[in-house]
Image (cartoon, rainbow, N blue to C red; front, top):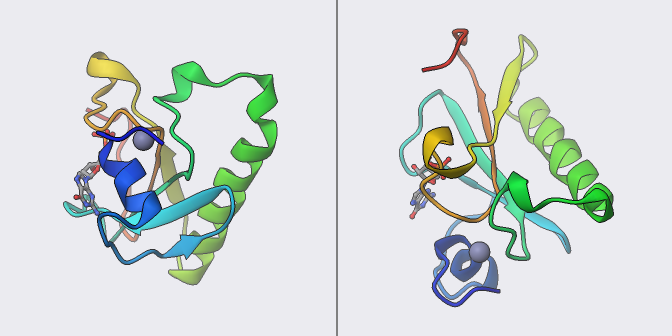
Length: 114
Ligand code: 5GP
Ligand code: ZN
């Protein structure tokens, strides 16, 4: 846990937030500023600054992040498709330095993203 990290404080319960999913490795919350009808952030409970910090040892964590995202997408009825995005660093548009997958769906997505 990183004491000054927003998502770590949510993970620990210090900042209360409704959780769409929570287990030993990952939790998920709805984005406060949704960019699509479904916009969920799926992230590790432990502090990982971004995807740039991942190693082969994080395989189980990554598997869980993706499988939880798929389960939430199914639960939200996104049979037509959905998108996962993880922003890394300033050029990637990352504003909260705690690894998270954006799960976006419920509308048609554009490519390339902005
Ligand atoms: P990033 O810009 O790092 O890729 O994504 C951070 C996301 O966290 C943004 O989409 C932003 O709307 C969301 N966010 C920031 N603060 C809060 C908050 O207090 N609660 C929730 N639910 N989402 C937040
Ligand atoms: Zn953190």
